[in-house]
Length: 119
Image 1: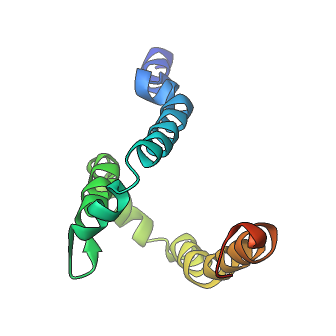
Image 2 (image 1 turned 180 degrees about the vertical axis):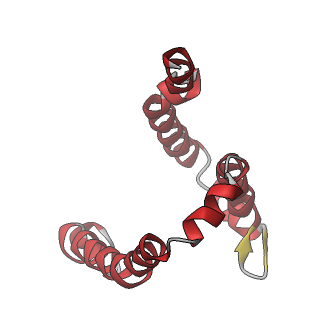
């Protein structure tokens, strides 16, 4: 039993260095923006009904691995205990939007106000 748990808890190469991957992607994005300043404008032109196709594709590839790991039997079991589900829905829809508004107002309206033209 312990051996099975130990094997499941092992992190893959990608998971183990996820922080470095994120830092690398941020650096790559900043570098692309500096080297090709029109790239963002050109990518923004690729849209259907004001939905950016490149962003939609990237979001799909970001969410797909998570979706295929869903154990639907556990989802049904979670639905039979509505209290945690309702609490999660309440927090996500009633508390988090106002928290995000407060955080964005703090950063964009106070801390970085002098750096953002038009604010």
